[in-house]
Length: 234
Image (cartoon, rainbow, N blue to C red; front, side, top):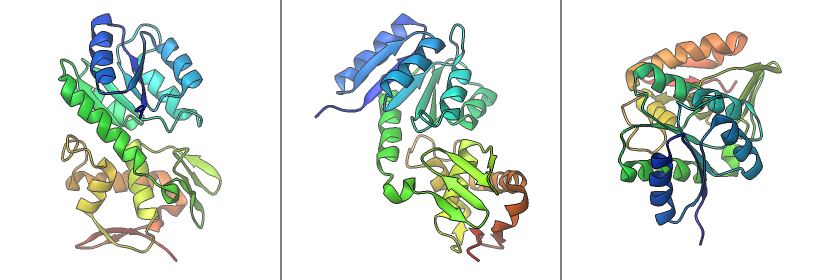
C-alpha cells in the first residue's frame, strides 16, 4: 500500500536528491521544489501529507512559507518539518512558534530525518474524530482542524505549543493535569523532542502567555497548587 506524500523544499539539488532517495526508498511519494513560491503553489495544488521545508530559500524564505501555509485554513493542517543550516535557538523557536511540527538541522542523518517524518505523521494519524471536533467552553471556542482559537468570536493568535496546551486542557475540562502530562501533550510522542523545547519548568511560562492572550477568559485556566493546571468546566 502506498505511503503518504511528501513535498521537499530546498534550493540545494544535492539535498533534494538525498532526501528524495531516502524517502522514496521507504515507500513515500516524493515531490521536490526549490523555491518558496513553488512550495506554496505545489502545496495548494497537491495537498501533501507532510512538508520538509528549508528556511534559506530564494525569494520567499522558509519562515514566510510556513507562516502563509499555517494562516491558510486549507493548508494549516499539513505538518511541516523544517530542514535547515540555521540551527540557532532563535531560529528553532521562530519555526516552532509559526506552527512547524519539528526541526532538523544540517548536516543531518537521513535515518534521523526519516524517523522525524514518521513520528510527525504517526502523531497526526493518531488523531480521531473527537480530536478534530470543535471544542466550546462558554466564550472560548477551539477549532483543532483549523488550528484556530476564538474568544467571544474574536480570533486569538497562539503559538503552536500554546495551542496544543490549551486544547489538551480544554478536552478534559475540570481535570487536573501535572506539568509533565502537559509537557507530553505539547510535544507529542516524538522521542527526539522530549525535554528539548518544552520542559516542566517552561510550562508555567506558556501558561502565563496563554492567560495574557486569552484576555477576559484567562481565568478559565486555573492553577492547582502542588499539582498543575486545569481548565474550568463551570
